[in-house]
Length: 435
Image (cartoon, rainbow, N blue to C red):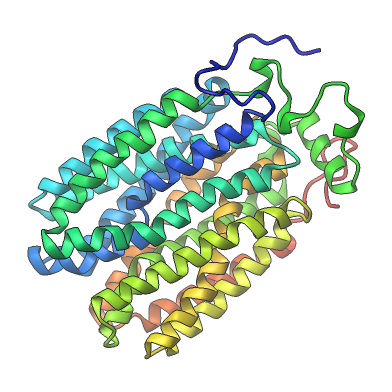
C-alpha cells in the first residue's frame, strides 16, 4: 500500500471519486490555451498589422519566432532534468509570469530587435517551462491513459489557436495590435500562472496514488492487452538518457521532431499571409486559421484514443502523410473553398502531431526521464526546427510568394514519414516494446 507523503487540499480538489490526474490534465489544457499567442496561428494575425504599421518585412517578423524556437530548445536542456526531479509547479508558474511581462513588452515595442527579444524569450520560456512542464506532468500521472490525458492539453492549445485570433480581431482592427498584446499579458497571468501554482503536482506516488488512478492491489487495474503490458514494462524499467542515446529510435525521433517542427511551425505562421496574397481578405484568411486550428482541436481526442491503442509511430506516419498532402493543397488553392480544404487536412495532421510531440519520448522511453531525454534532444532540434519560419519569410521576400517554401516542406514531411517507419521501438532488457 502506498503511503502518501503529501495531500491534495480538499478545497482545490473536492472530487474524492475522481482521480487527481484529470485535474493535472485539465490544468494543462487551460495553460495551453492561455499561451497560444506564442504559436504560429495566433502570431499570423499580427504579421500584416505589425508589418503595415512598423514597416517591417516578413523576414524581420518571422525571425522573432525563430529566435524563440531556438532558445526554447536550448532552455529545454536546462529545465528537463529539474522537471523530472522536482515537478512542473514552480517552473511553470514562474514561466507564465515571465511570459506575461514579455507580452507587455511587445505592446510597447518600437524596433525589430524589441520583438526578437520579447517574443523570442516569451516563446522560449513557454516551450521549456509551460509546454514541457505539462508534458512531464501528464507523463508522470498517466501511462495507459496517457494519450487521452495528453489530448486535453493538446485540445487547449489547438482550440486556443482557433478562437484566440478571432477574439483578438476586434481589438486589432478597432484599436491596435498593441492593445491585443496588453490583453494577452493579463490573461496569461490569470489563466496560466495561477492554475499552474494551484494545481500542478509532481507524481501520483507522492500522494499515495498510482498512475491512471489504478489501485495498488486491484486485479482489474492490471494491464491486459499486449500494448498495455508493453507500456507497463517501459514504466517498470525506464530508460536513462545514456541508454536512450544508444538506440536508433532516439535519433529517428529527433529527425521526426526536428523536421516536422521545421515545416509545421513555418506553415502555421505564414499560411494566413499566403492566402492574403492570393486575394483572400484579412478577415477570411484569419478564418482559415480558425478552420485548421479547430479541426486540430477536435481531432486531438480521437487521435488520443488511437494512441492509447496503437503504437505512436503509426499515428505519426499518418500525420506526416496528411501534412505532405496539405502542402500541395495550399500551393494550388486560389479560392476560399480551397483554403478551407487545406485547413481541414492540415488541421487533422496537426491534431496528431500536437500529441506526438508531447508523447513520443515518454511512450518510447518511460516517464521517469521524460524531461531529461527531451533535454538531450533539444540542442539538435534547436538548429533545425526554428529555421523553417525565417526560411519561408526569406523565400517569400525573394521570390514574391511561398510556393518554393511549401515544396520544401512537402519533402520534409516525407522525410519524417520515413524516419517514423524505421523507428521501431527498442528492446530494453527482456521487454519487447514493438507490439
